[in-house]
Image (cartoon, rainbow, N blue to C red; front, side):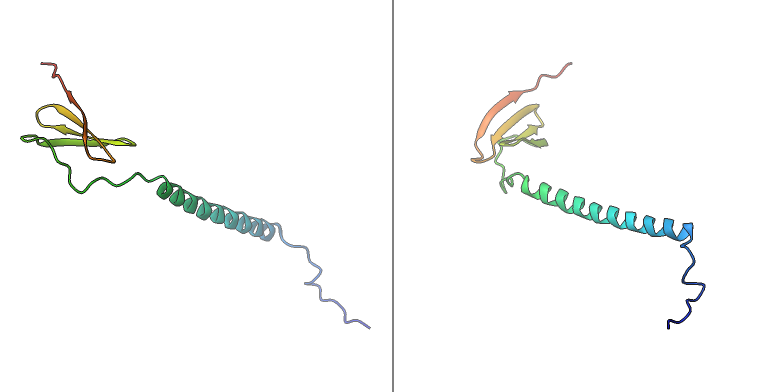
Length: 104
Protein backbone atom coordinates (compact mmCIF):
# COMPACT_ATOMS: atom_id res chain seq x y z
CA UNK A 1 0.00 0.00 0.00
CA UNK A 2 1.32 3.42 -0.94
CA UNK A 3 1.10 6.50 1.15
CA UNK A 4 -1.44 9.06 -0.03
CA UNK A 5 0.17 11.87 -2.03
CA UNK A 6 0.09 15.32 -0.54
CA UNK A 7 -1.86 17.96 -2.52
CA UNK A 8 1.29 20.11 -3.02
CA UNK A 9 2.96 17.40 -5.16
CA UNK A 10 0.16 17.37 -7.73
CA UNK A 11 0.01 21.14 -8.31
CA UNK A 12 1.14 22.41 -11.72
CA UNK A 13 4.16 24.70 -11.93
CA UNK A 14 3.18 28.40 -11.80
CA UNK A 15 3.76 30.22 -15.13
CA UNK A 16 5.99 32.82 -13.45
CA UNK A 17 8.29 30.10 -12.12
CA UNK A 18 8.54 28.44 -15.54
CA UNK A 19 9.32 31.82 -17.15
CA UNK A 20 12.00 32.48 -14.53
CA UNK A 21 13.56 29.06 -15.12
CA UNK A 22 13.70 29.64 -18.91
CA UNK A 23 15.08 33.15 -18.40
CA UNK A 24 17.90 31.92 -16.13
CA UNK A 25 18.77 29.18 -18.64
CA UNK A 26 18.89 31.65 -21.55
CA UNK A 27 20.97 34.15 -19.57
CA UNK A 28 23.43 31.40 -18.60
CA UNK A 29 23.82 30.46 -22.27
CA UNK A 30 24.35 34.10 -23.26
CA UNK A 31 27.00 34.56 -20.57
CA UNK A 32 28.87 31.43 -21.66
CA UNK A 33 28.74 32.56 -25.31
CA UNK A 34 29.99 36.02 -24.29
CA UNK A 35 32.98 34.61 -22.41
CA UNK A 36 33.84 32.35 -25.35
CA UNK A 37 33.60 35.36 -27.69
CA UNK A 38 35.85 37.50 -25.48
CA UNK A 39 38.45 34.72 -25.29
CA UNK A 40 38.33 34.31 -29.08
CA UNK A 41 38.81 38.05 -29.63
CA UNK A 42 41.79 38.13 -27.26
CA UNK A 43 43.32 35.13 -29.02
CA UNK A 44 42.68 36.67 -32.43
CA UNK A 45 44.20 39.99 -31.41
CA UNK A 46 47.43 38.47 -30.14
CA UNK A 47 47.93 36.04 -33.04
CA UNK A 48 47.70 38.93 -35.54
CA UNK A 49 49.99 41.26 -33.60
CA UNK A 50 52.61 43.07 -35.65
CA UNK A 51 56.31 42.75 -35.10
CA UNK A 52 57.64 45.14 -32.48
CA UNK A 53 59.38 48.30 -33.55
CA UNK A 54 63.08 48.80 -33.02
CA UNK A 55 64.08 50.33 -29.72
CA UNK A 56 65.89 53.17 -31.49
CA UNK A 57 64.86 54.97 -34.68
CA UNK A 58 67.76 56.87 -36.18
CA UNK A 59 66.62 59.99 -38.01
CA UNK A 60 68.79 62.01 -40.39
CA UNK A 61 70.81 64.75 -38.71
CA UNK A 62 68.76 67.79 -37.79
CA UNK A 63 65.39 66.03 -38.16
CA UNK A 64 62.90 66.20 -35.29
CA UNK A 65 59.92 63.87 -35.21
CA UNK A 66 56.43 65.32 -34.95
CA UNK A 67 54.27 62.30 -35.84
CA UNK A 68 54.53 58.57 -36.35
CA UNK A 69 52.52 55.85 -38.14
CA UNK A 70 53.06 52.25 -39.20
CA UNK A 71 52.02 49.70 -41.79
CA UNK A 72 52.45 45.95 -42.08
CA UNK A 73 56.14 46.03 -43.11
CA UNK A 74 57.07 49.70 -42.67
CA UNK A 75 56.84 52.62 -40.28
CA UNK A 76 56.95 56.33 -41.01
CA UNK A 77 58.08 59.40 -39.12
CA UNK A 78 56.84 62.88 -39.99
CA UNK A 79 59.45 65.51 -39.22
CA UNK A 80 59.11 69.12 -38.15
CA UNK A 81 60.42 70.30 -41.53
CA UNK A 82 57.47 68.63 -43.38
CA UNK A 83 59.10 65.45 -44.59
CA UNK A 84 57.81 61.89 -44.30
CA UNK A 85 60.56 59.33 -43.69
CA UNK A 86 59.48 55.76 -44.46
CA UNK A 87 61.57 52.99 -42.89
CA UNK A 88 61.64 49.24 -43.48
CA UNK A 89 60.36 47.42 -40.40
CA UNK A 90 62.68 44.41 -40.71
CA UNK A 91 65.97 46.20 -41.38
CA UNK A 92 65.33 49.73 -40.10
CA UNK A 93 66.71 51.18 -43.35
CA UNK A 94 65.25 54.35 -44.82
CA UNK A 95 63.11 53.33 -47.82
CA UNK A 96 61.75 56.63 -49.01
CA UNK A 97 61.64 60.33 -48.19
CA UNK A 98 58.58 62.34 -49.18
CA UNK A 99 58.56 66.13 -49.05
CA UNK A 100 55.19 67.55 -48.01
CA UNK A 101 54.24 70.77 -49.74
CA UNK A 102 52.31 73.24 -47.66
CA UNK A 103 49.34 75.02 -49.18
CA UNK A 104 50.41 78.56 -48.31
